[in-house]
Length: 132
Image (tube, rainbow, N blue to C red; front, side, top):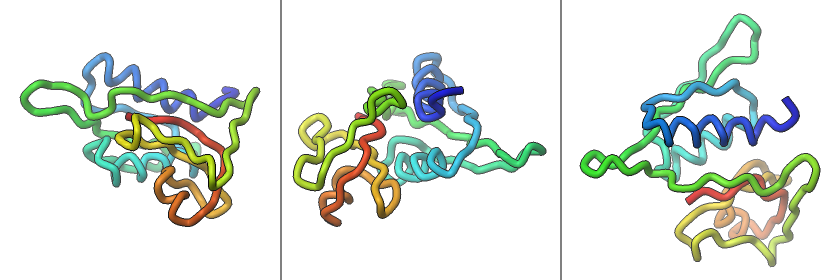
C-alpha cells in the first residue's frame, strides 16, 4: 500500500456511503491520532484500538449519524497531501475548511492537530486532509 492515509479515508468514506455503523481500519500511530481528533470534534461516535497477532492492530470506528434523518456527521473527506505531491503550509497560511465549519488535519512538528490548534500554537505543517 503506497498511501495508508488515503486508504483510511477511503474506508471511512465507503462505510458512510454504505450506511455502515462500524468500520475497521489497520492501525498506525498517525491513524490513531487522526481518529482521536475525529472523536474530539464530534465526527465519530466512538473508537477502539484492538491488538492483533501481527502486532499492527486494528482501529474500530463507530460512525455517527443523525438519529432522525440518518444523515452522517461526516459529509466530505478529502485527502490533500499525497505521497507524490506534499502540501505544506506555514502558520500564516493555514487553510480554512467551509469558512471555519470544517476542519483540516495537519501533521506538525508538535504532533497531529487541527488547523485551529495549529493557529493557536503558531505552527505550520503538512496538510493531511479536509473534513466537513
